Amino acid sequence: SQKIEQNSEALNIQEGKTATLTCNYTNYSPAYLQWYRQDPGRGPVFLLLIRENEKEKRKERLKVTFDTTLKQSLFHITASQPADSATYLCALDLTGGGNKLTFGTGTQLKVEL
Amino acid sequence: DVKVTQSSRYLVKRTGEKVFLECVQDMDHENMFWYRQDPGLGLRLIYFSYDVKMKEKGDIPEGYSVSREKKERFSLILESASTNQTSMYLCASSLFAGQGEQYFGPGTRLTVT
Image 1 (cartoon, one colour):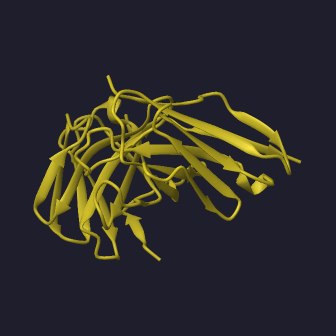
Image 2 (cartoon, each protein chain N blue to C red; image 1 turned 90 degrees about the vertical axis):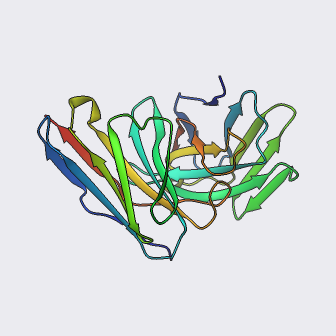
Image 3 (cartoon, each protein chain N blue to C red; image 1 turned 135 degrees about the vertical axis):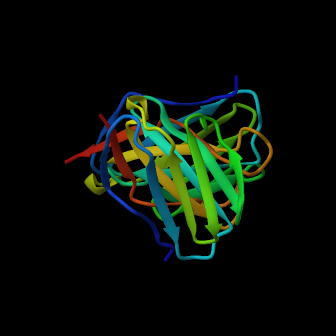
């Protein structure tokens, strides 16, 4: 079955380092992929969308790559700060119908001083 | 900024009760979604709507129904609440269906006893 995989283990990194989170998907090749941030007890917040014809996209300290051959997206936070600590979710349309997203279970990031 | 509001942050109901969860968005978005989020399972789509009075089943519609009588309002109904419906319920809206970013409400933590 089609699914999305994110590392379920929390990622702990030191302030100032680059955090790299992975999103892998199987079978279907989506036209785009999205990343969201979720803080405890709150709804997810949209961060970035990358399309299949875009290898890389940046927004301030965030960078997303999209490798449709590997069926993988990498999400990078450079110069990480304790305020970046949150759970990060990737989401994509696995149906091809273009009308709904499937979310990964998310990876928790903790940035330590 | 898009604002998505949900009627309650916390709700406690008894088994067998009929439960209404309300969601309102203020940005004239066509599309609205209801998810539930459980530890280890991530966000799962219950129902979505792409227009007034239109609805489509998501991945886990059993035990739920929805209503969209006005563009800005999308209601989730639990006809007869059961303990396995204890969860965090999140509403979202988007301008474009699949590839548009989704804006989430704060969530309703529902406990069914």
